Amino acid sequence: MARKPDSHHVLPLWCDDLIASCVDMTPACFGAYMRLLCYAWTRGGIPDDQAACHRIAGGMEPGDWEAVRARLAVMDDGRLTHERLELERLAVAEIREKRSEAGRRGGRPKANEKQNESKRKANEKQNESKTKAPNPSPSLPIREETHTHTPAEPDGFRQPGWAADEWARFVAAWNVTERAEPWPHLTPPDGWVDLAASPGWLERAREALARLPSREYFNRPLPVTRFFDFVDRIRAGEFADPKEPAGRRARQPAGGNL
Image (cartoon, rainbow, N blue to C red; front, side, top):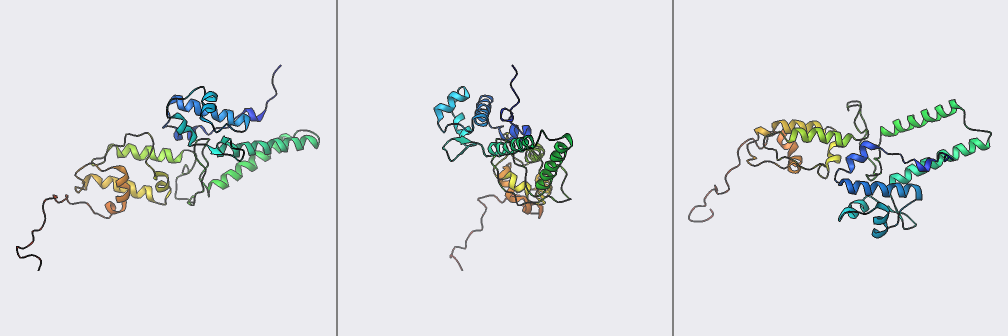
């Protein structure tokens, strides 16, 4: 006999954000993480116990538990879950309650009522995205953003995965630029999202990157994190002259200071 559909057996995922935020995980660690998320979804949480989570996940490699545990939060009952997971659970519970209420009033909602409800929620999400960054899938923490969308920004800005897309474009140019120390890691350095979200910063950074090959002061490849500190100074024309050798200093007169 076929089982009736149950929305708690369906876990919604933002796939692009999930993959982008878990690029630091090995395939085995990612698989264990997903099994734990599924367990938390169907059972309301997972035990805050490494050995128990090892059994639920089917085993984890050394170091995987730390990577997984850092993404989870402790609930009031002492179990672990993911903040976005619980938000999705509340949304599902709200939908089920509305359906139950419609059934008590005399049947399922009509087709046009479902369509109107879907349109209403889509409009609410669109309005919310104008003032907040979209919350990522069960893989990134939820936080408030102060930057607002402006007409000058591309349509895709702050849509799911925007930070990963912008970093992919930037690092591709960075790794082929003279005087830039190649960035070999899959994830961006700390602080990238905040910088990229600052109004006009990406345009200033691209302009500074284009000038970097002519900045002879940097006789060694410049790390990308140091470049972030120098963006506006490079744009202002600094660092054009070669660095003075360390041993070349003005000599004091034999008699000492005047």
